[in-house]
Length: 325
Image 1 (spheres, rainbow, N blue to C red):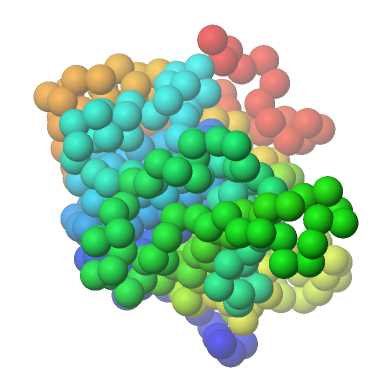
Image 2 (cartoon, rainbow, N blue to C red):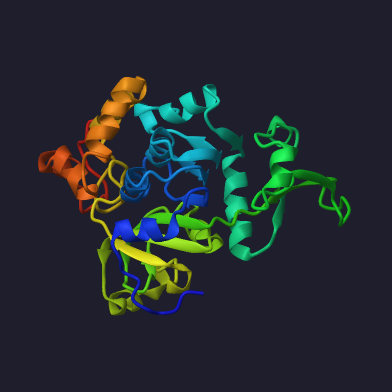
């Protein structure tokens, strides 16, 4: 349990301290919303390797981790960047080429798995998946599971309902909990001790944070604890779960952060064009990731005019009039 101490550090320090080669890592956000992109780019910049990655339904975050050569195994429901890439491109290519091992669950399954991890139970029961091949097709072999103590020995298990079929369900599906070594999320506001406030949809981020051994929070603003205490009902993650707090304005870019900025359709379209070609994607990484010192360097390459275009409208929380085609 993390005590109420000042946990503010640089992103470089946080990634170096908590993301190690081969660790199990979870990243928050959903498709084009609140991916912890500054942290993702720093992981790539520090050349972390052989990560076992978990995500609910992610976008650029997962794609860049895979494209940057950081991921060897992935568990996810879906990866896509909206119209720019209905299926994330480096993710798709890596699976087609056999460069990573991949195991898929449904969106609901991944939510339940993180929820089980947050509750501290080893598995959770559901009816979801009955009658589908998602329970039968495994990405990780029994032999690999037997050798890795961090992996459950089965993808899922179908059992007789132990309470009888009075509910109408004779069978139930058991799916394993997820307990990552580290979860990384991006939020709108946090205090120095790690209490977090997510504005808008929170997706699976809260359970992802509570299920992890360590949590890195990047945020748009670090605010006084007194401000968060004025409306405590809006704070979803207490400080006890958080290991590091990092102030990174535009830390979700090029994905969106509700009430602050929208996703950048122009950047994502350009990124998709690069991602389809190995040579172009390598050049992209050399310029936008390895070629800059930090996330501010990437934003400088993007330019202030582009950031103004995606700035959130105060009334709606997203950019109005943005060309998303």
